[in-house]
Image (cartoon, rainbow, N blue to C red):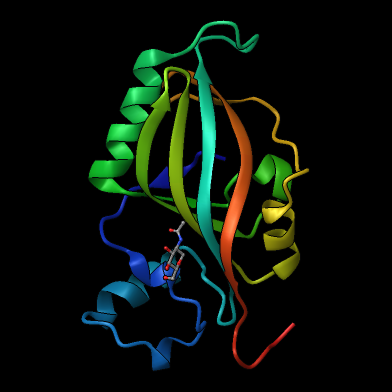
Length: 164
Ligand SMILES: *[C@@H]1O[C@H](CO)[C@@H](O)[C@H](O)[C@H]1NC(C)=O
């Protein structure tokens, strides 16, 4: 679920036209290569916004993982992150998350800026629903157990030819 690879400057996923031919992009070989490797569908629904997460050293969630939370935040600010099949334990396959900015806002809380994309609008609905629950999940890269808090979607878009 945190299976992800790291990319810089991939803001095209924030684009919501869902139509590669109409995008004005400086390097289409680069973007096409990424779209193919993450199996980005032709028509995509997207949302952006922010969300918070808390990192712990144990599954019981009694001690904040100070190091792991800092590493994750620094890594996102430095390298950005694409998560293919983001939180598949909650959504199943098909959500592609792009995380491009992070800020420690409290001793136990990171704030993340995200753009999410999917060929299935109900997955975007579920992610933008403040009542969706996220079980605690282990991230071996940072030896940290994470509690994802609700995703606050500020903007949503649909593909132009497939309006909802
Ligand atoms: C979402 O995207 C819009 C349009 O690009 C932008 O103005 C807004 O700041 C973004 N929201 C967040 C939380 O990044």
